[in-house]
Image 1 (cartoon, one colour):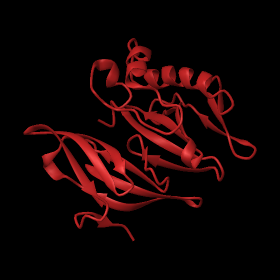
Image 2 (spheres, rainbow, N blue to C red; image 1 turned 120 degrees about the horizontal axis):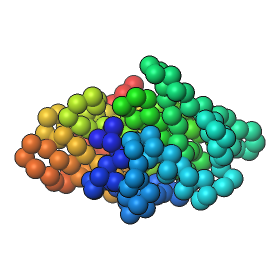
Image 3 (cartoon, helix red, strand yellow; image 1 turned 90 degrees about the horizontal axis):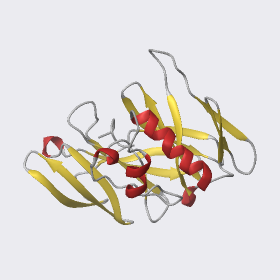
Length: 214
């Protein structure tokens, strides 16, 4: 799921793209990435849409993506074509509720999302696209797949000082794919696939099954 997160919709998979800024809808993503060669190309096509939608947020000059900071300044994400350590960055979304930018990042066959806090220029790499809670104080990522994933759902605390893990939970072998959403500030809902088929589930943040990270 992590590897194909941006590319999957173009292949007909039903993933959800949600955020509190200028998100690209599933329909748009399917249309934009219909002819994409790979996830990195899909990310760049999405970026072209978002640069028009968010003209004062970022700009692209060759292999450099420049993102504006708040209240002033800017920071750069520079693509590398290195065969071994090459990386590409694409503007993906803006989370207005926490004044943060989501950057779609590819490195070889792997994809992640880099969250940039514009007021502090702090960055954190997340395994999947983060979903912002209604209270604007938490994010959730669900890194679930059959190979090369942590198979963990993580709730992250959001502060001006940075983003940190607060809660971790693993469904084990019961799920092979999953998408997490916020039902409300205290509840997560999931759409998942597993050996026994697909389904939905909910989990409260005060559920004792969570591992709390010190």
